[in-house]
Length: 121
Image 1: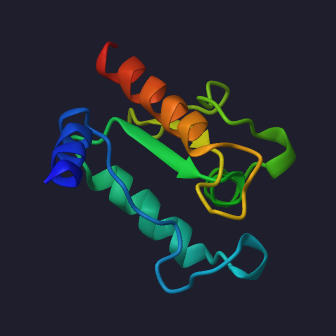
Image 2: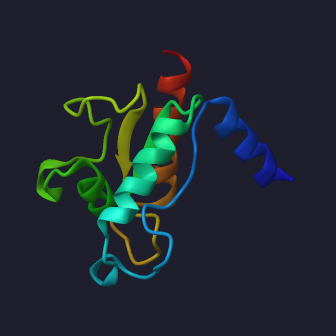
């Protein structure tokens, strides 16, 4: 029930959850992002009238989607990137257990700040 309530809050905030690559799983180094993956997500964004915020879990998928080198991205709002169809883009650190650099609390707080900022705009 708690999880359902949290997803409802995301919907109310006009935040959607999806993966860039739907047919693979595993660590970054083994995932092969294809043009069809990027186009699928761009179409989803274009066709969603209510989406307001697109959050990438890791820099690599954001890099592929935005066509910007990973080293030029930060874990933050991507202000230098023009919005796609009025959707704000931001990146959070990987939520994977192998990413010990960032705590789940840190990632959660960062995501909450994105959502709060978008809701209050």
